[in-house]
Amino acid sequence: MLQKLTKILASVMLGVLFALGVGTAANAYTQDDAESVAALSSTVYEEISSNKYEADGGGTKSSLVPGSKLFTKDEETGVYQINEKELSRLSTKGRDKLADDVAKASNKAVADNEGNENSLIDSTAKSNWIKDLSKSNGFGTRVMSAAQAEWHPDFDKAAEILKPFNGFISTLMGLGAILIMSLLGLQVVAEVLFITIPATRGIFGGTDTGVLNGGEKSVIVKGLVSGDARKAVETSDQLDSKALFRWAGYTFVKFIAVAFIMVFFVTGQIWPFINGLTDWVYAFTH
Image 1 (cartoon, one colour):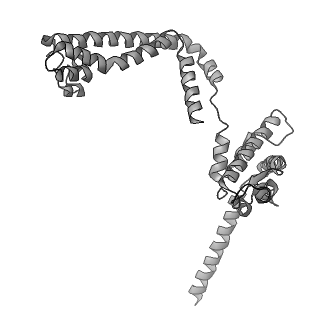
Image 2: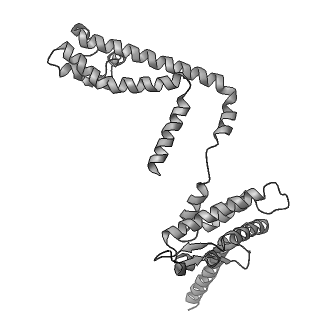
């Protein structure tokens, strides 16, 4: 009987300790952190509390949920948390807009208080609060994604860091361009020889494309002739002129593409070219 009672008491104590642990984890801030997070969350709350968010079933005026209902204030820490009950009323669009507003208001609050030594709001407070909000059911991944959407590559800073290496990088780019053009020219000569002079085909491994898989020391020499040239010879009924025209058809797009890119590369216009491509892709996907 005593042993059974001891087990019951032990179970109760473990349950109490677990509950206390969970409660502590939910508000795991130091006093300074709690004050800074509370200051930030209050600022964000004031910014978005008057906003309206679409509820499930449509965005009519009667179905919109005010931002003030979507947060509750923790009496112990003063930090605003998501009201999951009210959040569950929102549509997917409404939740996305709320996450976006929280991220933007947080970034604005941090930016507005940057350099103010008397302010409690800083990037650490933002990180702590976003991490806290990310635990909210149905909102966590949205607010994390919205926060990360503010990250953009700083090309100016990257260029400044790489500035001492500009000469070395430019030299490597020049060597790369010369190497590509030289190897391409060598390949064209080898393939024309392979197609028009049958006696040279044995040097390059014949028409079997399997020789391009490696495994032999002579694979570099054999690799000068592409599978396109071998296929052209193999399917041309022993007619060299026919093989040459087929090879030209197979490789025309490749040579034009390489030449097109190399023009931009050699003239230093490769970045405007890439920017133009990215603008086109962006316009196509939005």
